[in-house]
Amino acid sequence: MKVLKFGGSSIGNTKRIENVIEILSGIKDKNFIVVFSALQGVTDKLISLGHLALQQNKKYKTILVKLEKMHLNIITELNKKKSLKIQKKISNLFLELTEILHGVYLLKELTDRTLDHIMSFGEKFSCLIISETLKNRNIDNDYLEANKLIITDSKFTNANINFNITNKKIIEYFRTHKKSQIVTGFIAENKKGEITTLGRGGSDFTASILGAALNVEEIQIWTDVNGILTADPKKVNQAYTLPKITYEEAMELSHFGAKVIHPPTLLPALKKKIKIIIKNSFDPKKLGTEIISRTNDNSCQIKGISSIDNISIINVQGGGMVGVTGIASRLFGVLADKNINIILITQASSEHSICFAVLPKQANNAKQLIEKEFRLEIIDEKINN
Image (cartoon, rainbow, N blue to C red; front, side, top):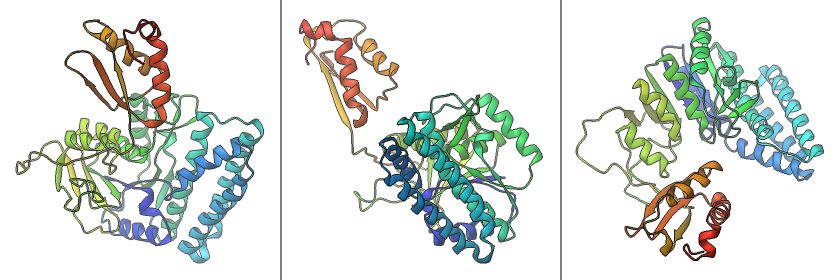
């Protein structure tokens, strides 16, 4: 058995969805598991709708109508005379979404829990459309909402998986469901049954979680490039696709900017030594990149160069830091308590300064936390501003 995952760029419009259906039709063993993201750009629009409703900007209603119309048009284009049943199901989902957004509008409140619920509709829309369309093309399947199987904590917008419960649920479900499965990526739920999400890029993670639990032959991540490249082709003209790469190398590249694969995706597959293949849905004949436990290719010690463009650097320095124990512990402890992710850390050999990188949206908060933690040292001029 194989697990396939198609990202939003692979299903951005009717033509691209037809292309994906052609890829699925060409699979000899029709017993497949396919994970889909939302249609291209839809998750961003759903987030925007939530914030517009929060601001009591009635523009959200117009955008919501356009979003529903876009999905209904795609259904008609894909299914011609068999579209009414699917359109009704999608319209019911949009009615539910409308009520949630109206609640945000009235209460002037948008919690992370509510935002997760709003974002979850993108994958429900796309998977329901594709599942029903495949049935109309005589490809039998079940539509599966992944939150029924994947259980997490309550860290909304970037939840952590409870693998013990999740793996048991996945194995039990697939023991009794033998049809092909069309699965919503990105979404899960906590023990209370509340919708959670796995962070941006979480559909890759969904595919890996399913694949590892079922110990599948391979996991295929279908995207809009030929695989993992040696560098960003927009910056390096000579960048080329790597035919094979190890899990560790892929993890390094993805952490520092390579957007082809979501970093947590690799962990479940790594534990089970399941091969991951990155493929191009626009050029399916290309071999892509295989991510495996070990490669025999020693021709090039450096596999790639990756970069992150938008980063904030924070420097903590002062003569009072030299030889004082516990400075780093206090510094990174206060940031960890507020879930601020550190991307890079450097320290001068003299112990005179510590420099670290964070995402720009977390920079001001990080600065304020550090100033509060070291307020006495700053007053005594042991640490500079």
